[in-house]
Amino acid sequence: MPARHRLHALLLIAALASGCATPVAVPMLDLDPARSRIWLIGEVHDNAAQHALRLRALDALLARGERPALLMEQIDRERQSEIDRLLAEARASGRPQDAAPATAQAIAALDGPMSGWDWAYYRPYIERAVTHGLPLVAVNVSRDAARRVIREGLAAQGFDAAVPEPLLSAQAQLIEASHCGMVDAALARRMAAAQVARDQAMARAVQQAAGPALDGAVVLLAGNGHVRRDLGVPRWLAAPLATRAVVVGLVEAGGDDPPGDAGIAPYDLRLETPRQDREDPCAGMGGTRPTSTGVTSPPPAQRQDDKTPR
Image (cartoon, rainbow, N blue to C red; front, side, top):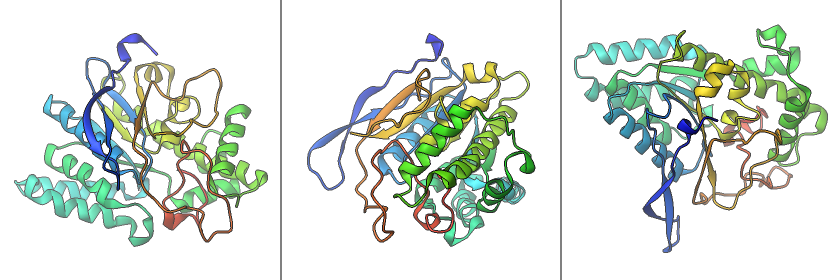
């Protein structure tokens, strides 16, 4: 990664850990356009501190005058036409700042109550897109499409099937580790293809948003597993764009990054936040708790009927 793309994590903000009176340092994320205009920013999906951190970073970027395309894993690609319509209606109202909350609520409702995402975390990003006129791009491969990849393979669904064996094997191992002992090795390899499909879809969206000259501003919001430079979206970007992008992993304190490609660091910048207080995700499933916080599992509503990881 070129030195000009290195970021500085400044421990400037003190926050209270959930349920604890001891101050915990929360890092500040600086999306400096002088370093890059293409940002792939990870998350642990239910970590409130991480969402607050990213939202502050986006607000600071907007205050600098940047208007990045906002790419969101949380919205299925099939919803793009509906999103475009809702955004156009809000902007045509003449007061998009007033229409932003209702528009964000409508977009969040597109996938229905069983989407599994906690939209209280994601609506503020959509509101920024409405208010500031940002392109809002849905980049997720839907559950139905992911199931077709698992059944029929990547090529049958229009994805690149030339997946290096070490990458596919590492993805399969992460899936086994993050699914409560409920997935065997054979199924994990098939599911790894769905994870690759999502990474490829996001990479295509990043490439398109950056434009032919690779000078468009882009912010991708996705799970840590998707943004990893060794296994995720950057592996499917054209080399010039992968070099320009900055990859940020937001991980929980005390967590280890699960192994991937030993020759490539997962993130250009790795920021730790306090651990979110949560119930055991494997409780009631007859499995064992995932051992690594570096793996992001599906939202709770998807664990039973959609085992593909996020």
